[in-house]
Image 1 (spheres, rainbow, N blue to C red):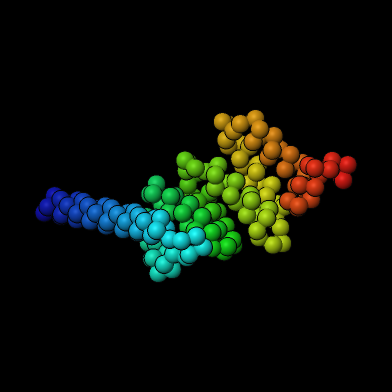
Image 2 (cartoon, rainbow, N blue to C red):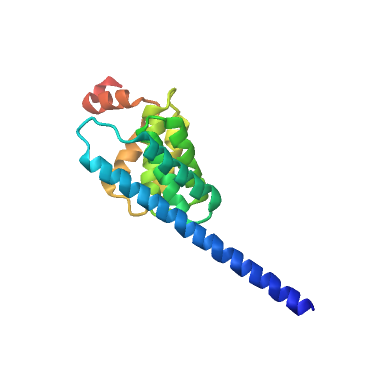
Length: 182
């Protein structure tokens, strides 16, 4: 009797995981289909014309839903990155930063991590006011520590930024063109 009960549990778990996997794949397909629709629409739009907000909202909802249902899945990292970029594009920088932080904290092996770290440093350096120099330093130091393949030029640029982290971007530009200004 115990063997039959154990077999039933194993079968129930296997069936449950199979349907979850199927649902996961269906949601991924919905996301890629919606992305394709938005891309196709963008290709036919005139300059300055805005896309369909309903499609954008649907994509956002799908991306959020995927992440909430499958937070450990590798595709969730892509969903978070896309949400970060979408909200940045909508100039909703605090929301973009929340998704960027979630990605950075929960998916340390994300393939495009350096791009997200650079975006986060820029978001806190330029767009979120008042400027958060501690966050700018944090993300730039993460880039230097983690990206072993960073070019010499990029590394020097980040090190220069860190050396002058007390300056705003405008002040930094002034310093670069007029070194005697500081």
